[in-house]
Length: 145
Length: 144
Image 1 (tube, rainbow over the protein chains, first blue to last red):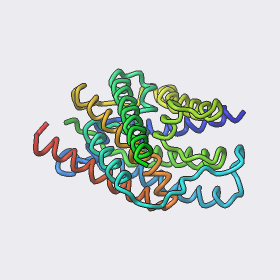
Image 2 (tube, helix red, strand yellow; image 1 turned 90 degrees about the vertical axis):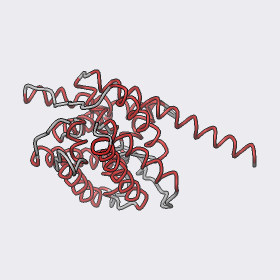
Image 3 (cartoon, helix red, strand yellow; image 1 turned 30 degrees about the vertical axis):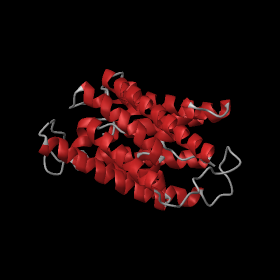
Image 4 (cartoon, rainbow over the protein chains, first blue to last red; image 1 turned 180 degrees about the vertical axis):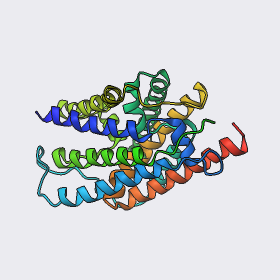
């Protein structure tokens, strides 16, 4: 039952991404191309998503716990560090090159288009490389301590 | 470059559905709807239940375009205006960036912004600026 509900939540997300244009690199890149073929559509995606989530979270997070779990799993860190800023900036560079972000590309796999599979393959390679670098840094830190 | 039509209603509706899914996931499972976190958790699960909830969400996401196809008779447009090499380079950099940055457009940009998390606001501003600069440099300085 829980898994069926979660599948449907993923489906709503996937339909939302599909009709919003976030799964279309040409549209994403045009959103950022103020000096060229500008298409402001994606501000409506972000605006709609953030407003609905902001309002919805107000109600949901007032409850003591979610319906099918014992607690809310929320990030607790509030500090700003270079890793966050530089990592996010790097993500922006990649997004600006490819036009796909992870949330846009994962639903787009359903279209069966080979470009999406190529992107997601490269994305996975990047995630693994970053995890490898992270653990190498952590190991060196423990070795020095 | 490919011109794309301005689609405020479809984009607003799609955005609202993304928001609805994010709220539903928090209400049901108490989790952030972040594509990066969901994908990373599938690759390196800590337990079966930790893996399974993410796997079914991913399956639902992938079914999204098929449902759109059922209702509209056509797949959502995926127009890729760049070379395969650039697609691979971009994908690899996105993978590095979202792992170090701890999230992407959905996790930081939607859920984090909605929680008014300082880390997510800084991350979102950071990647939006970097994306705009990258597109400008590629299209208007290199003229690709």
